[in-house]
Image 1 (cartoon, rainbow, N blue to C red):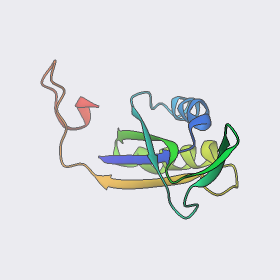
Image 2 (spheres, one colour):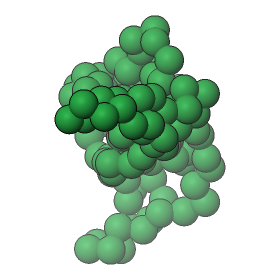
Image 3 (tube, rainbow, N blue to C red):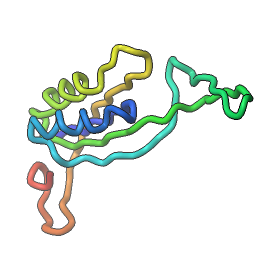
Image 4 (spheres, helix red, strand yellow):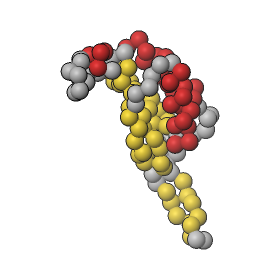
Length: 112
């Protein structure tokens, strides 16, 4: 099993969710986060005063899937989240040792 952690632009969430649903992945955890990478934030003007925004709003998705689905999920996220501009995001892939569905007691891939 693999865990995919994807950090994407907020306005791309619906497109990514639809792309994952098209390949059969429906479960995910979504968090609103802030951060910066190479873009290092930006400046904004509020009530005539300019100020520096160091952390940019992003969406973090966490998806656990069977190992064979990971590559398809990565490609779906990449295609749906791509804008070609700085700040499109990143995808991290981690190994998952085990999983347990609390309600039924199912484990491993059955728990997904």
